[in-house]
Amino acid sequence: MELIGEYKLIRPLARGGMADLYLAEKQGPGEFVKTVVIKRVTKALLNDDEVGAMFLDEARVHGQLHHPHIVQLFDLKEDKNAYYMVLEYVPGWDLHQLITGMKPLEQSVRAGLALPIICNVLDALHFAHHLAVIHRDISPGNILISTTGAAKLCDFGVAKSDLQQTFTKTGFTKGKFRYMAPEQLEGGLIDPRADLFSIGVCLYETITGKKLFGQAKDEDVIQAIRSGRYPIVLSLPGNLHSPIKTLLQRALMSSPKDRFQSARDFGLQCAEVLATLHSIEKPLFWGDYFGDEAVDHSPSKGQSKKLGRFRRLIGNLSKLSQG
Image 1 (cartoon, one colour):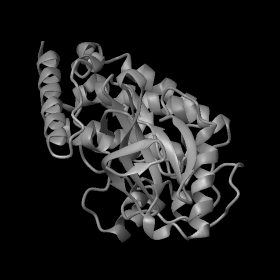
Image 2 (cartoon, rainbow, N blue to C red):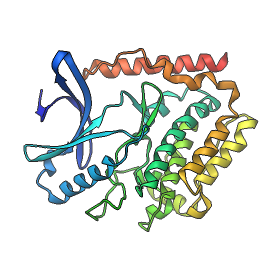
Image 3 (cartoon, rainbow, N blue to C red):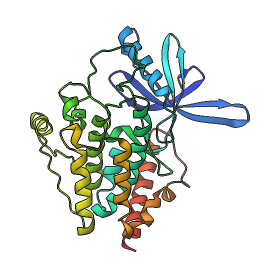
Image 4 (cartoon, rainbow, N blue to C red):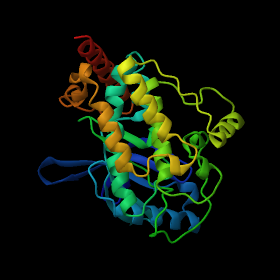
């Protein structure tokens, strides 16, 4: 196993354009083991000074964000002339995986699971925005759901903050623009309300299990975002349909002045809608269905076990919603 500083790399978790993520362990006396995530600049870019500066910017921004619904940055270190971050490991799934796994559930049940997740993330954004940090890359892949049921926001690699020392154009991976607010898509000045638009897209996809723009061509999606034409199609009971549709419509307004004006306001409105979901109160304690299961970190069997636990979770939620 490769060592980086004090940490033993176990397996890759994700590879990006600028950095790679690894599951890692630090061992200590008395069989002490701490599982973390190591984020380091991809080897092909180690000698790129601009990328190194951007990586340090990310660490400076992320390092000030201490919040229960933000993945914690433990440390920034250097090994063999390369920087790396030591991040909190969140055993569980990202929101994209959760959206896929919840497809068998009715939309009313999905709404009862989606709203607490979104409330968690909005709480995190309320904190970040007050520190003048705009995430700018909200998407299901950057929202993690822990084995306790809590949601945590991650990846501040393209965040905007006064702490930045580099100001370069930032590219997004293909598909991310489907979560961008119109003003961000146009490359104009943005404020925290751009993040709230992205949260609206995530909320829609979590409740419906469908992409907001379906399989539309990229150019059609861009035009739809610019014009404010969003196909908000819901299949909810009468008492839920109107408040949730109103929630989504406001979050997805093309003009920032017509959206929720703060993450706190958006979160309070989500909480009010959640309070109407009396018929599915039990599934909201869904962390109970994760907690007693050990996580297998092995590269091959681990994923199979995680998927098996997830399918059992979905089965339990379906039964409870019918009870």
